[in-house]
Image (cartoon, rainbow, N blue to C red; front, side, top):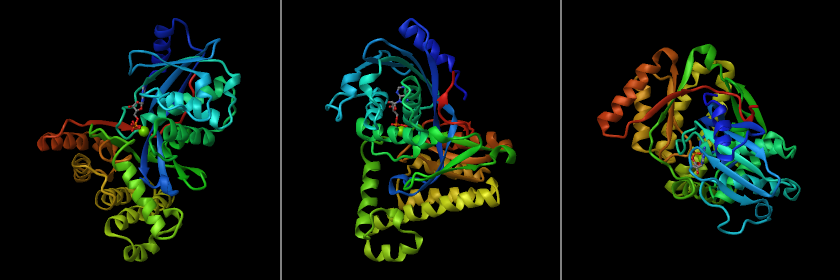
Length: 391
Ligand code: ADP
Ligand code: MG
């Protein structure tokens, strides 16, 4: 973790005039490969990163929850009785606090007895950039979920907390996201990725071996803001559902690349290309896991490159800034590169020899300036341990 947890403790003390009971962190994540496959019951391979959101929590003796963030001026307040309702009254949650309050509501939906707990004050500090494809939303929700799971002694395990986070994001925030972000944030391990089967929710920790191989992962945040709750993401999701329906399966997971000729015959061109991205991407995730195990991390570059092409041409979720970031990284010595996250902006990742990080970074910055794009934000991330108590 690069963020000092003390930042959250200090923020708590200055807002609430006392010291917190404890500090918990949720990690941001990078998806190494497997994009838009999660809500198609497919495979993903994300990892938790060394950028995180820390929440400081202190108990109250009433039924009120207050939460504040370094990102916002005022503390937001909710009543536990409102969050215990089976269905949230429309308009109960809005703005950024829909994430943490949504988590509390979702804890209740998973069986936590919210009538038996007392309120809390909480303060959030973070070094996960928002809207950059590094899942600041999951970092926030997983920090809060882990904190309250401990503070209220609820006893949920990490895979269940991931489902709680997803429910909160889907139903309280209204973003139709899959289970990947929360799983990575909660289950991640140092220098390893989380190989997740989004149908069975089985997960396996896969060693990345980046440290030993002298590789680093460069994140190129294009600063083109994406918007999950509306627009393209929901539209892609609908296309995948349409493709599955027309091919007579309940989800695209029931198909593999061997079904592509039939899909091409039976689907319209756009739906076919959406389906082709999902089926080939699932295959690339499996190939990446196999390659990491047999040949090591230097051999996965071409799979990252192929994933980008598929997202650009078949799924059509890239933007010129992401394409330029990827092409420039590839040209200036990255082993592989691709956009990561939901698309329409956000970040690209490049797998780069540590000695070439500066050269690749400079080339990307220059290319953006030449193209007249906004200056990108570049930094390296490590695969790190996921969410948990900090102190
Ligand atoms: P991403 O998860 O890719 O960063 P999202 O749109 O899913 O982007 O989530 C970003 C939103 O999450 C922000 O607009 C804000 O509402 C909320 N958020 C994330 N981190 C924080 C934080 N530290 N403090 C307050 N709100 C946050
Ligand atoms: Mg998010």
